[in-house]
Image (tube, rainbow, N blue to C red; front, top):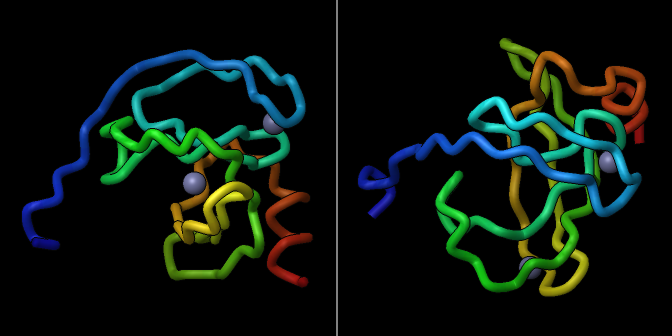
Length: 100
Ligand SMILES: [Zn+2]
Ligand SMILES: [Zn+2]
């Protein structure tokens, strides 16, 4: 039921397991603003219900009207996911992904 999905906000700080950056949770941070890697922890955005815990690799970035969408693939299970880029994300990295 797509319409039933609700975004759950949770504030949490975490250490990026890819580059070691300390990330301040602002409520909907689900990826590292420096290297853009994420972690497979959600089934629905923000629910932290996935038990995979694999690293999500940023594959590419796509330009949309309001910014960028980053496409991810889970290293461990191959799960595909996309998320809107945040304002404080590493822009050079996003541009690099959008070109590849
Ligand atoms: Zn990182
Ligand atoms: Zn996974």
